[in-house]
Image (cartoon, rainbow, N blue to C red; front, side, top):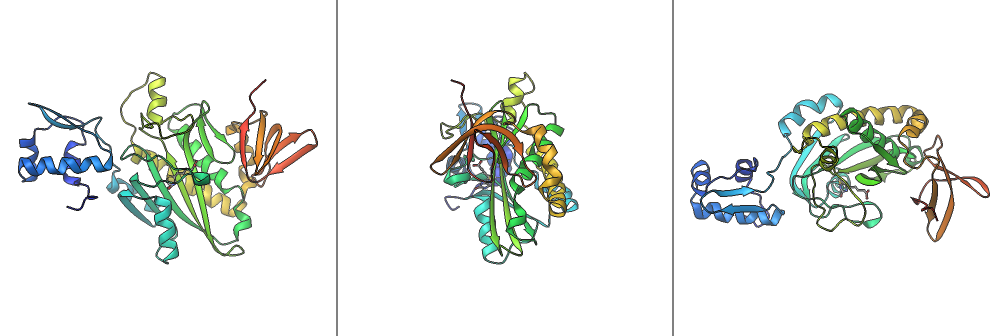
Length: 331
Ligand code: BTN
């Protein structure tokens, strides 16, 4: 077994989070107890914590909920997803899809998902913390025929699909911070990373990367901003602390996302402007807009029909299509 090979049969046995004796595991897998122990060691490389108690055996702390790939293969083609590329672990689903595109082997509407990313990428060169089995890490390839200039507002449309998904599943307090952070109570729940290649005036290939914190309890000190997860949101409201089913979440998200992408292709961002206002975390807030070295201060007036942020400054209204925005702390 290579050092980065996941013993999937053993993982399936321990996924329930209960104790299994070395003898019982060995019996099911037809291997010796020493071989069981050796396979368990390799879980550590995937960040999976194995607990062992004398007399009880081994367990995976909290268990692990993998994607139900059969269910995805059954549900997603009807939504226009042409192929699903499933990884237990990969560097980054975006990187994989960008590579497939550059080698001419990516389908339109190809979905790449992973249980773990070893080099998950966030915006502005940040890392995206991607522990095994806990969250949603996905990249979808979508071809647009009308050039890069028609893609303004696309990342907002992706965020809106995710917010609508979460609201439809009963999650409350979901907001969007321009351009594409999904927040709950000011804490980051999900992020979006779009990467565009192709002809700026013609056929463009967009890799839509989305990471959602689903069952993560612990950012292991690696996340440098306030964050939350769907499981933590439920726990805070005194609801079940059962793991959230990420397969159902993914199917529901793909339904909203493919709808939004088709609508965006036909009508552009203008078809979404009014819906954005309902989800806008910055609406009417005093904000700071960072444009390189420059910082502009003013009141956020929402977005225009191109998805640009509108700011009322002391010089009048200004619009921005890039940069970072933060809420201005009151003095
Ligand atoms: C952000 O910084 O807010 C964007 C985060 C995007 C993370 C997702 S996880 C799936 C896909 N693969 C990556 O490497 N990044 C995106």
